Structures are given as C-alpha cells and as structure tokens.
Length: 201
Image (cartoon, rainbow, N blue to C red; front, top):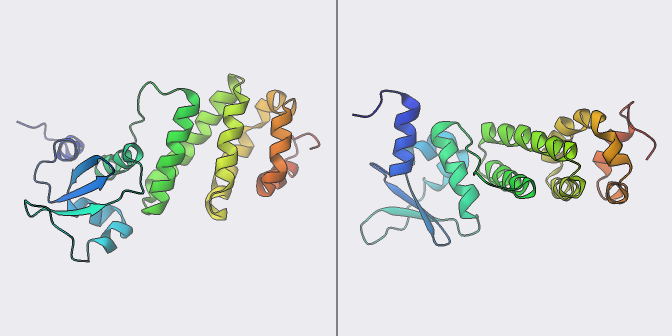
C-alpha cells in the first residue's frame, strides 16, 4: 500500500504517471502529467488546457513545449506536484547556477510564483557560496544573465543578492571583470553605489 501522506502520493503520481491524462513533450522527452495539477498550479497551463488539444494514437491529449529544455521543465513539473525543488545531484557550482536560472525562467514563464521565490533564494545562496570559494568568474557570468531578465525579476534578484555581498567585498573589489561588468548592469550598479558598505566603483 502507498504511504498515506499527501506529498508521497503526489510525488508518486508524478514519477509514475499513474492515472495521467496528458502528455507534455519537450524535444525527445515526454512527461506524463495530470491536467488537474497543471490547472491549479499555473494560470498559463490553465489557459492552454481551455483549448482543444491534439491527441496521440492512444487518444491522450498532448502539449508540445519544444522551446523549453527538458531537465528544468521536469523540475518545474515535479515542483507543481510536490512544492519541493529537488536540485539535480553532482552539478558543479557554475552548472548549478545555470540550472537555477533555467528553472527560474520557466517558473516565471508559467507563473509558478512559489518556485520563483525558491529559485531566487537558492540562486542567491549559490552565488554567495561561490564567492566564498573565490569562484568569482562563475558568479559574474550568472549576474550578467540575471541582468537580461525583465526589470522586475532582475530587481528581485538584486534585492536578494546585494545585501549579502558585504562580507565578500574583498574578492569582488579586486576583480577587473567585475568592475567591467557593472556598466552593463546599471540597476545592480546603482544598488551597490547606494549601499553604505560598498567602496567607490
């Protein structure tokens, strides 16, 4: 018998595809999902499900999301069932931050607000850990990618990241690439300039 916990049941529904009534295709990957979960978790999916969907040979409706990478899409879908973000194991720091960026973009695209918040916090944590390890270039690459987000989303990241930079100033202020990046990210630069603990830029 299945353990009688909601989380275990919901995760099992996702991982096994039990009673699934919809397929989501992304490239060569397919996910067996349930319209109910997509409907209640994402207004974007809810809108998609209002339309008549194409059907496969077995009669199951499907949605093609070939523009979305399968790995972060799978993490998004799992979160919609379990409300937990299970970061892939074995990723290097740079790859882990890239994955979080990809997950955030999908969470924003499909309006899964709780996952946006979690990805923001996890990415902020990952950037700080990388700075503590003096992996400055990986952080700069990530900051540049955040800088091309829509303004509101980028500001959310900056508000989470900037206050935590104070103890990491030594590795940042000595890095020429960091100073070269700042003119590209005027909002980040302005937030740093107004922080009383940040040196002249």
